[in-house]
Image (cartoon, rainbow, N blue to C red):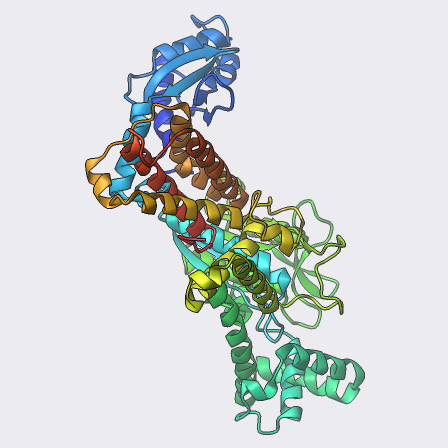
Length: 589
C-alpha cells in the first residue's frame, strides 16, 4: 500500500528496497517477487527477510545453482547492498535472513526527526483520496452509546490516513430521510400550530418527541393515515413539509454537533436526503446494464452467493438503504473521485455491505480483486456491553445517551484529581481542562485498544485506572517525560541543535528501535483498518520507556544530553499517537 517515495523514518520500507536489489541479483528471472520483510520477535536480529522459503518451489524445477532454501537465504545475504543502516546479517533455519540495524544509524534517524519534525516519519500511501463514512446517527433520535464506536473508530482511521498525506472526506451519512418523517412532521403540526416560530427549546427533548409521535402513530389510525400522506408530500417537495423537515433536522444537528465538539471530531454531513435525487439516475444506469430485475413486485439485483437479492425499489415504489447506498457509492466514485470508501458500522450490517459491494462489482464500479482500487471496505465493530454482559443500557433499560456518558467520564476524572489535591495546585480552568482530556481520552482509548470486531464491556473503573493498558496510565507516562525534561532545566530546543544521541545501553537501543517502528505501525493500522495496532504500539512504547528510565539515569548523568533527547523523541511520538487516537495529551498530572 505504501508509495515508492522514500521515507527515511520507515525502516521496513528501506530494508525492502535493499532486499529488492538483492532479489534481482539472486534470482534475476523472477521479476514479480516482492521482498517479504518483517520485524523480528526472536533474538537473532531486528528484522527478517523471509523470501527464501517461498522462492524455492518456484526455482527448484529450473536449472538452478541452489540446493534448497538455506542456500537461497545465503545468496540473498551475500547480494545485499552495503548500507549504513545494517550492522550485521545472518541466515537462520530454512533461509531466513536476519538483519541487525546499526545503533548509530537509529540514533541519526531519531535526531533528524527531532530537527525536521514527526511529519517526516509519516507513511506515504499509494492513494490520494479516501471517503470515511462514520458516526451516521438518525435525525430526531439522540446519539447513544451505540454511536460511540463508529464515531471514535471512524475519527481515528481518518486521522491516521490524514497523517499519511491522504485527502480524507469525512462523511456523516445521517438518517435524515424516510417514512418516519411523515409521523414527526404531522406530530409537530399538531403539537405546535405555530411551529415555524417554535424554537428547539420549545420542542424540547427530541427523543421524547420521537417516542410520543411513534406512540400516536401506532395507536391512532387517523394520525397514521395523515403521517403516510405527509411522507408523500415531503418527498414531492411541498414547501411547508420541506420547511418542517428542515427544522427537525436543524434541532437534531445542533445536538449532534455538541457531542462532536466535545469529542473534537470533525465531520461533513451528507445524509440520505443528499443522495436521494441521484437514485433514479443510478438505478437507470444499473437497469441499462441488465442488472435490475423484477421479483415479486419489487425491483432487485441478484448477487452471487445469496439466494435473497438486493432490493433496490420496494413493492410500493419506495427506495431503501440499498438504493441510497448505491447512489452514494456512485457519487463518491464518480463525483468525489474517491479511491477508497470506508464504511464504519456495527458488524450486524456486514451482510448488507457484502451484498451491496457484490452488486457494485457486477456493475463494474469496483474491481473483483478486493486489494485493487477503487476499493470499498466495511469496518465492522462489536457491541458495547454492560457489566451484565448484555447491551449497555441505563437501569430503566434505556440506551445510554452519549452526552451523559461523557459527563460522567469527566466528573469521575475530576473527582480523582481532586482526591489527589490537584484542585489546590491548579486553577479551576486547568483542572477542568485536564479532567476533560483524561475522562474523554479514557473512554476513547478503552474502545480503540480492543480489536474492533469484538464486543467490549464498558467499565468506568477499569478505563479510569492509572495502571495497566489505559489512557490514564499513558497520559501519566507522557506527563512524567515532560516533567523529567522540565526538571533538567535544559532548553530542549537548543539541545536538538547542539546535542547528539548515543544508544550504547541495551535499553536505550530498544527504545530507539521501537521509536523507529512508528511509521510502519501507522501504515499497518491504516492498511488493515485496525486502530488497536496503534494502541498496542503506544502501550509498548510506554513500557520500553519505563525500562529505559529505570535502568538509565537521565538528569545528572554523563549521558544527560543524549538521554534528554531520547526522552523528547519519545514524548513527540507519544503525542502524535495521542493525536491519531483523538486523545488530548496533558503535560502534567
